Each structure stands twice: as C-alpha cells, then as structure tokens.
Image 1 (cartoon, rainbow over the protein chains, first blue to last red):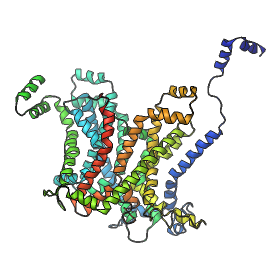
Image 2 (cartoon, rainbow over the protein chains, first blue to last red; image 1 turned 135 degrees about the vertical axis):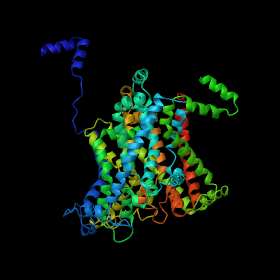
Image 3 (cartoon, each protein chain N blue to C red; image 1 turned 180 degrees about the horizontal axis):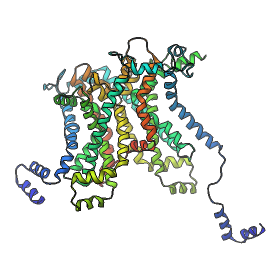
Length: 311
Length: 313
C-alpha cells in the first residue's frame, strides 16, 4: 500500500499508469436528474403511442352498455369476445352483413400474389441493372425512381382505362397488376443496391464458365439474396395489406380488401354504431401487419430504412 | 460492331431510332427481355399515363375522356371552386404543421434514444408499431378516441371534469389538428428511426472534439450534428413531404372530409371528381396540380442531390 503511494508520487509516468488502470466506464448512479428527464419524456411519448392500442383492445372486449357509461380508460368489467365474433362473421358494410372475413380472404388473395410477383420482377430488374447493363438501362432506372414520387392520383384514371381494355378491371388481377407496378421502384432499388454489394467476381466466374442470364440468376444470385428477400417481403406484405386506394378503385365491390371493408363497416351510417365491433374489426385488420412487425423486429426497420437509402 | 451501328445510324435518316432499335436486338437480349416489365412500367405508366393525364386535363371530358380542347378552362373552374381552395389551404396548413412537428419530434426522440439508454429496443418497438398500421386503422382508432360523447371528452366529463372540451372532430376550426394528432402518431416513429440512424452514423471523434472545446451539448447538436446529418434530414423531408401530398386514406377514415368540407384534401377532390361526380377532366386537372406540387418539392432536391456532384454519369 505504502509502496504504491511512493511510486505514484515518484513521477508522471507512474501516475499515468495508475490512471490507465482506472479506465473504463465510470459507474454512474442510475437516477441522475438528466436520466430522470430523459426517461420521463420517453415514458410520456410511449403513453401517446400506446394509448390507442390500449383503447382498441379494451373497447373490443366490452359490451355496448358498458361502453355507453362513457369511460374510455376503464378495462372491461366482463370481458367478452362477442364483438370479435360479430366483427368477423356478421358486421354490416352497408351492402352485406358477412363481417370482415370475406375482406380478409380478399386481402390474402391480393397480398400473396402481388408480393411474389412484384418481388420476382424487381429482383430480375435489379440483377439486370447491375450485371447486365444495356444502353438506356440507367435512364429507365432513374425515371422509375422519380416515378415513385408521382402522386398515384395522377396515374389512376389512365390505369383504370388500361385495365378496362385488358378486361381485368374490377377483379383481383387489376389490383395485383397495380401493386406490382407501384411496388417496382422501391423494390428494384432495394435489389439493385443489394446485388451491387455482392462481389462481382462471382458473376464473372459463372460467366466464364458459360452460364447465361437466367442460369446465373437462379443458381447464384437468388440463393444469395435471401436476406433482401425477407426485407422486401416485409415491405410488400405490410404495404399491400394496408393499401386502401387501389383496393377501392380497382378491385370491384366483390373483391374489396380488408381495409376497404373495415372502413365501410365503421363509417356506414345505418343503425346505431357498435364501437366494440368497430374496434374488434380495426384490430383484426391491423393484426397481419402487426404480426409481421413484431416477428420481423429489426428487419422491419431495415425494410423501411431501405426506402430512405438512395442508390 | 457497335461503332458501325453508330456510324450507320448517323448516316441514316432514321437516326437515333435505328440505333435504338438495333441496340435493343443486338446486345444483352435476355437482359432486355427480363427488364421488359420495368421498361413497360416506366414508359406506359410513369411517362405515358402522366402525359395522358396532363393532356386530357385540357379537355372537357365528363363521363368518358373526349378530345374537345378547352384550354385552361378546367383550371379556372378548379380555382373558382370553393371546395378545391379549401382543400389546398387544408393541405398547406396540415403539411406545414405535420412536416415541422414530425421532424422536430422525430429528431428529439432520436436524440433521447441516443443517450445510451436502457430498454432502447422496447422504446423503439413502441414508437414504430403505428407505422406498420394502415391509415384506415389509424384514422378509425382516433375517430373513436375523439368521439365527443363516449371518447376522451365524454370520459373526462363523466369523471367530473365537466368543462373538458376535446371536440376537434366536430369543430371545423380544429379538425385539421385532429388529423395532425393521428398523422403524427403514425409517422413520427419512422422519422425517429431515420434520425437515429443518422445520429449513429456520426463519428464519435466529433463528440470528443466538441467536448474538449467545451461546447455545450445542445450547441453541438444544433451547430455540428444537424448540419452533418443533412443527407438524412433531406431524405426525411422528401419522404414526409411526398407522403403529405398523397394524404387521402387518413382523411377518409377519420373525418371523411367533414364536418362539412372542413377537412377536405386535394387527393380526395381528385377521387370524387373522377369516380363520383363523373367529371373526369376536373379530376385530371386537380391531379395535375398535385403533380406540380410534388415536382416543386422533388426537383430542387434532385438538383441538390444529383446535379452538383456529377458522380452519377
């Protein structure tokens, strides 16, 4: 002990050594005023973000008499799943009273093919843009990216005419086509950037070995692009499931997706509103993207951040 | 081979078309076939449909597109229509508030999240989950919360605070702020994530240097970090901005343009004239104005991003 003291007082080098020994994160108390301010602001922000979710869930398990007492904060006294059953099977949209289930299946029928087709086309685009550049390919790509900023309303009516000419207006095919078109810019960007990050030697080696466009794509590029496929799928599933405009314009009454059905159920003016059914229906519609969000975690963040990364 | 084609094309009267056609068939044939959907989308949808819309906005098409040109008549009518002017004013008001608040709150939350806090993942999950939900879901939840008799206002009054007023959905002067609350709820988390990524991308040495020079933290953020995050900020503004112009679903779900026409927006005007009122050209003129607005946002950004550097040849 006394020896340490003598050494440290002996000269500057020794005292520096002692400091090096004491390095590392300084143990700070958890409840500093600064931390309290930070955590309380974050806590109140979280209240704002969580309150609607809480209200949705509690309201959906209440009975209508309980709701009419008028306390939106109160948890349900006698939780009941009746509103959920009604929302799924028998809530009225103004035309029919089949609940949300047809809308759910329509959304599935729209989302699955749209996601697969749009991702496949975008993957091929990205691959061609990086590995098989041709004259004008970059110009097409630039217009594609800028096209993604054009408001949909501008292209809506001509697209209605085109789909009408093709004889698919008012069917699921029209919605799938439109989703494929408008998903193309962001997905192509995503795949283009991903393929650009792969070592070009791989491509060259396969080329030397005599593999052609499709063979390299299916046997080399595709197996390597699983991570970006997952990101693209997250992006497309949530995006297409949440779409309203294309569903209401192109699908036709029979094929309305879930969002459109939901809006018709809640905002239809007939009868007295059943808020518990409305909230159950709202949660049901939000459930698919929410599950995707919670399951995918960080990949979801990557997916949406991909929209912000420029090529 | 390619040189010869070019020469021929120069000599030939058909010029660039011949060269273009030859190039299509001569090089990278399978790549061009594979990229055909992209080229079709670009040419037919993004270029073709846009030009079609602009062109027909100068006609008097009603139920079906027709070729009778009427010049700027549709635009004159557009700006003489009260509903359109209200829509534009609403969009400007909503857009200004939405842009400022989204950016400011997004940045502040990102700064707080960047303080080496615990439970960062939990906070992030909570702030971002609304972004996974559709505008329809967002609108309907807030519609219920802001329900005057049974929502927040009714609850507070029942609990004894009889003077509590939160009737924004039925109050024409406040309804835009109701939209704003719902819109911010949905979108702030996204901007926070972008900003957080930007903050994390800043070199730690900068912070050390600022500390050595004795610059206060807030000053470092304002004068050093924010300018360094220019890229992220611009991207966020462009994304939020082009989202604002498209604002449609949220209005349909939350207010349906009401009370009266107090919360109408341009995108809804377009839809109603095209598919409801059977006055196509009027809808096309309105949508052309939307396009113009987006161009005003995008072109300066594109110029700044790609024009000056010249790295994108």
